[in-house]
Image 1 (cartoon, rainbow, N blue to C red):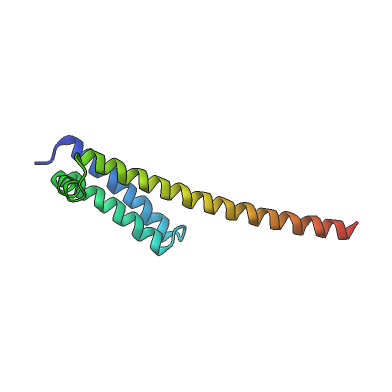
Image 2: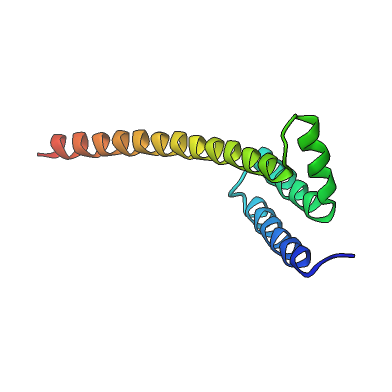
Length: 111
């Protein structure tokens, strides 16, 4: 039997999954990124519907409580995503610097 909180969480995950699909259809995320998010959200649905799965995995990895496993995975995932965002931001900064230089050189040549 599905509890009300499980239903709420599943609806949220399906909403998030639909957002990822829409971004993929719009071409805002690549296929690899879309697959990454599908794996994350489908894993969340599995953990919500069958919470004992998380307990089994936590025991397999030698982690005492299933909640600890979820926190460890979430923390690792957050660090990875922050790293990706940092790399993307650095790339954007380099591109902006390049464009500003080109514009400055063009304006300097006109004077």
